Image (cartoon, rainbow, N blue to C red; front, side, top):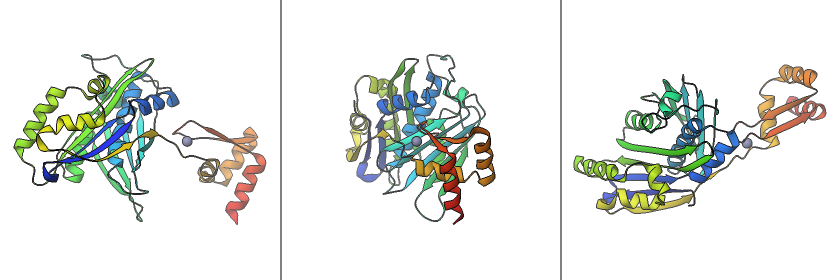
Length: 290
Ligand SMILES: [Zn+2]
């Protein structure tokens, strides 16, 4: 199944929905970061959520989800744009906690802390919203974020089935009740969600994002607005990493150069390593000065 993000409305625009199937790109993220299953699930949920939030942006805009928890996993970051590109990283990818009641204890691995949502809308200042984590399960935390920071009652589900040998299925959905929607709609949809069961299971059974949307919104004439293919994509380059190095400051760079004879920069998002020799560093510093 291809990785896809679907954007839809229903009930004459009173209900908005996003759904995602992300098995391949979460597997790619797992491989890049060498994630154990719990870390793969946590990172996968964050990547999937960021993608669904990204597709409501325009052009060059992007959204960053940052989860800063006190659990063993540390921080999780995911950045997505409006075109279905996503990348991310996690502080401690080796975290593997045993399943509890058949569920991956992502909340326990994330711990208590804060969820930040940073939207770069290409204005002077990015928009930043934050909430205290409810459970660290990420979907519940986002539900609270949408209600408190964006005043939109939402149902969020993120499901990753990850095994030590790889990601079996991954996806999610966000359903938002906009002005004009009724309690009856919310109740009927929540019954349908119950019948659907876990989103990772639905995807494992072969339902794609469009089918999930059509199933959940079946009583309210869903209209698919966009089907966007999604991918894990890091656009880092030597040029970008050299800017990051310059940010360390001249003294720090010269210090590393003296100790190591070269300077290495690693991209957090894709784990590519860029090596700069003495000549290149000297030229970078010279160019920065002029
Ligand atoms: Zn990169």
